[in-house]
Length: 192
Ligand SMILES: [Mg+2]
Ligand SMILES: [Zn+2]
Image (cartoon, rainbow, N blue to C red):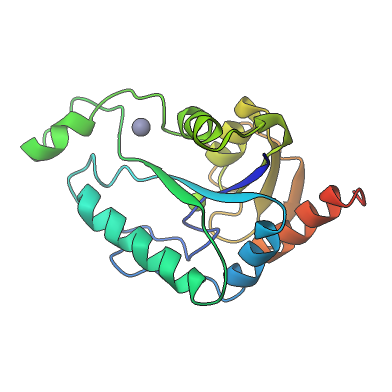
């Protein structure tokens, strides 16, 4: 089975720098893009959400945000097969973390650029990661995709790859999620 992994912030919805974005603004062409990707295989969101480890958002609140996002896309006929998130942060010595959030202060294996979320999805959906695609707006996404053996596509929305955190060259660079879906469709048809 093939899947397209989508980063969330800056790819599906507007980048939010404040974290606890209890409202999510989905890009206007995201649903059309996801519909195109639905024809190719599974569509799976993989997102780092360290706001939970910072004590600014609970998992329940985050899951509420994701339900809203999935429902908004579904209303336009676009299907998100699953959402995986990493609630962790590796910095253990942070004084202003509330007690309930301390358990999320771990050096986990799911926080991108690690591949834990992609590997879990591969088990859950019987994916061949080498045939999968990853669309992201940050170098951390591209590196996670490369680490898992996926074909990677950087979009110019959100951070547009300008975060400068990692050296990671994507296989393709394009405008936005819709363009990325066109590229992936082209690859699947043998045009690229
Ligand atoms: Mg992002
Ligand atoms: Zn994690």
